[in-house]
Image (cartoon, rainbow, N blue to C red):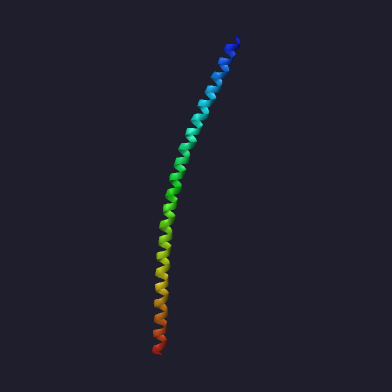
Length: 78
């Protein structure tokens, strides 16, 4: 095998490896895109959960005020 044939074979192998790495990079980019979408979805869900917790806290506070008011009314009736 001549020197130029050896070099051509080496260059061929390098090109194949570059293509392989490029495909792997493309796959990783796709996976990263999916992960990013999942994280954005989770972030949105967390925002909704935080809003619901805030609403529950408001409701609990209202119930506490009502219970306190009822207790005071009961004491005043004595």
